[in-house]
Amino acid sequence: MSYQTKLKQHAVPLTMLLAACVLFAVPELASAQSSQGIGKVAGNVSTEIQGVIPLINSVAYVVGAALCIIALFMFKKNRDDPRDTPLSKPLWTLVVAVGFLFFPTVVGIGAKTLFGSDGTAVEANSKTFNIPK
Image (cartoon, rainbow, N blue to C red):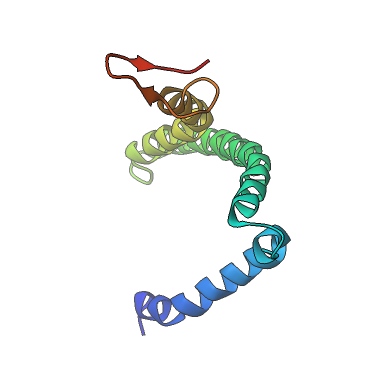
């Protein structure tokens, strides 16, 4: 049986297991009490997400730095034996590493461009686009 067939067979149980883990890890998602409306739950989720963003940025920096070091070792391996390691492998590893290193910056600039400097949506006036301050 191929890997794809096994993955298709186990996709639904794995998705349900992941959803259960998320609900148990973040109790605010599971406990939408009658006193809390959907807006309050959404506010709680958006507050919790603010703590995840620095974690994602940190992981991107660490993975990017690790891939840079791996690319340097691949360049050395290519220098020692060019037939064993083609030059494209360390170059693509370095490109991916640079992508991970610049990911937080690009996402931050993109968010400021799309949503304005204070994180609110850009409002369209009849004549021009005004970004709220």
